Amino acid sequence: MRVSYNIVTLAIAATANAATHDVAVGQFGLKYTPNTTYAAVGDTIIFSFYPMNHNVVSGPYDTPCRDGDGSGMYSGFIPSSEGIANRTFQITINNTDPIWFYCSKKGGGGHCTKGMVGVINPPSNTNQTLTQYAAGASNVKNTSYTEPGQVQLGAVIATSAYTNGTTTGGNGSNGTTGGAGASGNGSYTSPSVTFGGPVATGGSGSATSTGPATVATNAAAGVRAVGALVAAGGLAVALL
Ligand SMILES: [Cu+2]
Image (cartoon, rainbow, N blue to C red):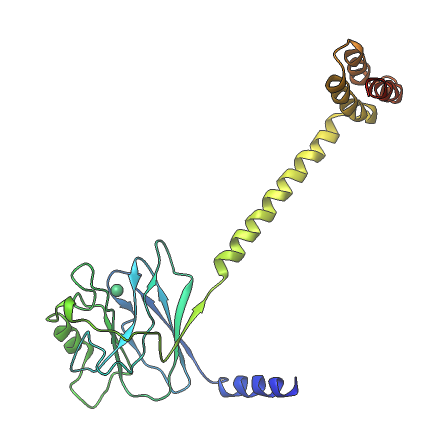
């Protein structure tokens, strides 16, 4: 227990000054928003995915839409049929070297070719720009896209926000049902009527004579409800 506690404390201390940067994947067409992020060491980048199916792959600046030796970050494909996906891809920045990335989805003419590219910490002392990277990507055929074989240099994190929302809705329905019961009591001021209901039901189920009908009438009138209950019980015993 003590060891775990110390680890948690260290983790909080190490991230006290870290920032979080959000990047939307495919929310506004075939693009990352924003497509350029400046992040410090220790910062976290959270990629959120939108329809229909995208990924995030990093690779060398000189070979757009390709992962180079395949050692860079990779989110895997994270699909969504509607709205934000229930999983994010998160990476922690370990150094401020540029990270050029793209989407390797081949459909629709190829997302990378169509300009679905981005960069983290673009260099300021070279002529390498995201505009030039995108220009190179526009000439790459989707059949030559590459991506690593597995998620790496980051983590796919499941989000539970939508599950909680559904649970809350269910509770609301239960409350409505309870309200209906309360208004039923309010319209019938005589408790004897309430007892009469069940008696009438039992009578009709156990006999075909006119006896049960009489019981029901008495109960509805609110007269001698207790007496009616006894009579019905006698009927049931006799038939058994
Ligand atoms: Cu895509």
